[in-house]
Length: 445
Ligand SMILES: NC(=O)c1ccc[n+]([C@@H]2O[C@H](COP(=O)([O-])OP(=O)(O)OC[C@H]3O[C@@H](n4cnc5c(N)ncnc54)[C@H](OP(=O)(O)O)[C@@H]3O)[C@@H](O)[C@H]2O)c1
Image 1 (tube, rainbow, N blue to C red):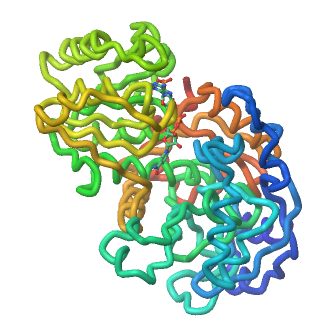
Image 2: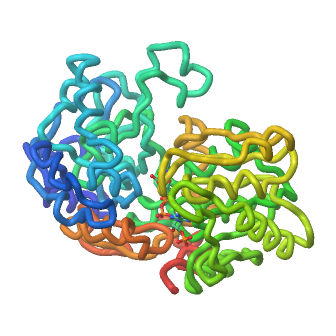
């Protein structure tokens, strides 16, 4: 592993040098163990501790298949799917691996008694499989997490529609929270040259998701002038949604839960901010009954902030707790676009407000190949910035996941894999200098 790292850190390594590197038989990776699937049975979600379920193990290097690449991972990031996996909710991810393993002898590699997690990476290509021409050893890359087979025409217009669509490192094995990862080469994209490894590894999953959900015609198709209500506006998804709203000439109305998070939204350029804790919204009177007066109170607050206007789009992901309010506050003809249900997936809303006011609920999930590429391109051009707040080492991934589980973090939490320290990997210092305050925005608070 040291030779691989030396080659990456050296400024004059060539593609031939990388191709000549001997690959190790095993590598260190953050794993879940199948025989621990039931370890949290009976506990409340909040009492399930990722530090107990996430292990740092030495695992065997997987065999490289056609159209794939082995990548030396310099840095990765924690996503909420790391939390879901580590607390075995809503289901154990080993079921995904078993199902994938039934598809073909090649996918059978993924069905193991351990699961290497991680759906983001920045690193360097080590080897490519048969049929790969666009990438070669030594290429500095980031990987998006869309894994598809594309053997069915269903996915040929929009790769998210492939019936064999999976999220790499969540529904497949050999993810990015490791020293080496296995990806399909169609997941690879150029690493933004002005960013460090850990910065480059952090936008991937959430940036692509926010792009499809808010900007793409497959999501809400946001346009200039739209008012966009963004739940969790300083969190993983929300910190990108806020940037997209501002960059696209829309007005974000940012919902957060404390002063620090409000300050971050202001630093991004947002002016309309709602502190849901300080303002004490209680959309549910009890477990089964919502309180429409609280929806109205939120709607009134939005009008105060917008000069009397309602929102064109609600960027939804908290789910059960907020969905009734989200449907209510959307303007006539507007869109509620949802990609998650963090607080519960059985939503309840008053349908009269939907149909009588001709509103739309749109489901959105990750991003297709092209959307992921466009979202990465915007980062590479310095138009959208990473929102990295804190970086952990690979052996502290459990703590990193706990921070996200407990909502103690801001933006994104990074993980150093092979990279020996933060701050490495910048190739375009000039572009970096231009955007440094924006790049460090989430670090400074
Ligand atoms: N479908 C997809 O492709 C996709 C992609 C990425 C993420 N997701 C899912 O989306 C969800 C959010 O992911 P993320 O990365 O943005 O997580 P995150 O970094 O934890 O951010 C979520 C934010 O939502 C807010 N929030 C949490 N619970 C809430 C509640 N009950 N009511 C109102 N606001 C609440 C919190 O902000 P405040 O406390 O400041 O309000 C939190 O910072 C997760 O469930 C994740 O699995 C789905």
